[in-house]
Image (cartoon, rainbow over all chains, first blue to last red; front, side, top):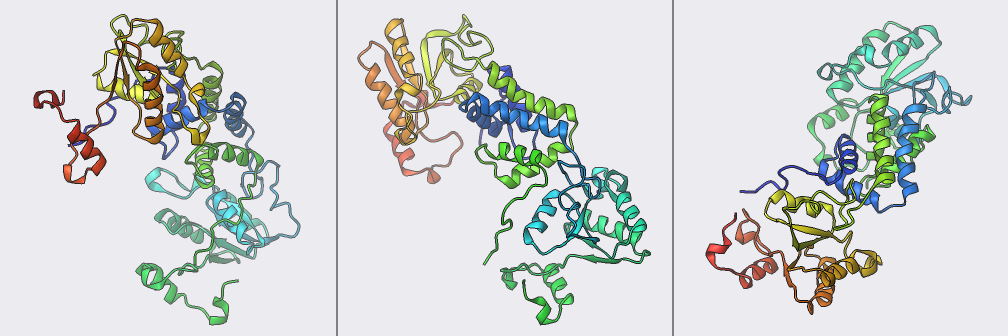
Length: 213
Length: 213
């Protein structure tokens, strides 16, 4: 028998309660963690917490998206899309800027991006019209694209989105590819799951092409 | 061999970077989690995020502490201190409002509180003058207190603070007590650590007093 630690949280101050409720509305932050964070804030300088609050207000009121790739950008066109050295004929399709930032940090990709802003997910009520799918198809139809690379997560939503996009794009004269699925660099084979290992075997490639760069 | 996932985080937007830095300045929130939270925010209504930011600004600019117990309170005197039914001659000494809220939710305490706002911690450079110690001693000297109950954590800092307070208060004609240390209700004895079990044996009490209320 374990008794619950709190029957209910009765805050001694509405201000604290409000701040706790706001913080715990974020995914993964519970009420108790939120209260711990709020008490931490109260020990900081007033100026720092004003800056903290203002950073979100400035973010939401001034947020801007690149008109080309729909990445978040402070300018009308983002740094990558306005870089003349980037190959505009190769587009990498990503879910959000987190994936874009991860790919950028590899220094392996010289093309541009298309940020969908989500994945098709019937369970969550997110259809193709809720994300930047039409814009990608329009881009593919109206420009001289050579290749579109899908870099979406290996989840039901990622696979659904990949499949939807592939059906819409396959009849255009553009190479459609997907990032390689296989064993992570540094992973030990005996611990790999069967699906990954199976995919890695069926997608085997000439040894000289398989060396990590 | 595992390669690091990010060499560095190059944000496509200063606004996003700023919000991520602010969130990840909180204890326990890393940069990657912070970015995930910021992207979550960007999918919310503008109004909600404005309220989010404002809740912290309002908190830090309007925060008020009870003049009696130093708990956070929206009024000059908090609800508990201004309740005529509470026993003002019994003071429970706590570290912060989290402990106060936890004790309140037990409905077992009818006295009032004294919120120290921290614990003495030489390692962190926190001395008696940084927390509300003088105020407690002053209260003990100048009023008709019957009992002071220490309800501090069983840590080095908690024990140091207990000891410091005890030395300052022992010569006054006030009962000084500490919350009981022992086996948690619902815990199995074979898994209790030796110190807790040892304390529980040496602090044994008549069976009829040991029943949980």
